[in-house]
Length: 160
Image (cartoon, rainbow, N blue to C red; front, top):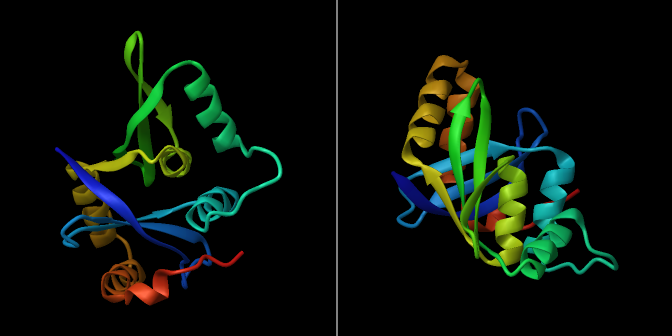
C-alpha cells in the first residue's frame, strides 16, 4: 500500500554528518529518514527555498524534457529498501500510458518538488526501515526518536 508523504525537513544527521530527507505521512504518524548525498540534498534545498539558478540544473532539465514531450510526472514512489539502499519509481503519464522510471529517491524527490507531484512511500519500505533500525546499534534508534520529537522550526533551512 502506498502512503502519501511530504517533506518534513532536510537536515544534517548529527551522527554521520550526512544530509537526511525526512518524510512524514499526512497524519504525522509515520516518519522516514532517507540519507542522501550532499549534491542531491543541495538540489532539493534549492527547490525548497525557491532559489533560482542562472541555468537549469539537472532536475530542471528533466522537468523541461518531460513537459516538452507532452508528458507529466504523475507521482513518485519510494518503493523498495534493499541492502540498506532505497529505490524509487517516477511515474510519468504520456500519450503512451504511464511509464515507471527507476530512480534514486533523492532524484525522484527533487523532480517531484519541481513538478509539484505527490510523493508516496510503500508501507513495506517504512516497515523494513524500522526493522533495519532494530538490527543496528542504538545510535540509529536514538536518531529515529530524536527525529520524531524534533520541533518543526528545527527542520527549517538546510545549510551547505
